[in-house]
Image (cartoon, rainbow, N blue to C red):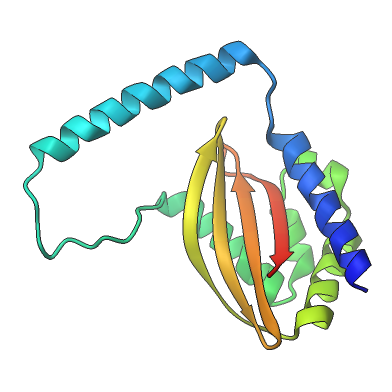
Length: 163
């Protein structure tokens, strides 16, 4: 059963890579330049802001994209697989069937128990893809959920990594 889980996770991992990676070096260079400019602007803004002792130190996340990722996860964990599948981008739907998505979820819950909760722990952006990482708590263990969204706010990747 664990072998099947790892095969399914590997399959989903390949999907995210296939759907989200762009080998265009000029696009990569432009993105790096934009990132550097954004970092410099951010540093200047931080320097110009007054410090506030009551300011929260929690990371800031794009609220719209976070809401999309969490709505998708809510559907998965509540076993609304058809609704979750409908949230996937057309490219993802070409790579995975609704039945495969359901099988992945069923394998995870059979291996580590019923779902309890999830919590957003980090978010990154790579080549226009936002990746949200959640810690998931199950009755018999933990897992990590990764939900990837493109700039159009469509789900282009989904992983579950048992811990």
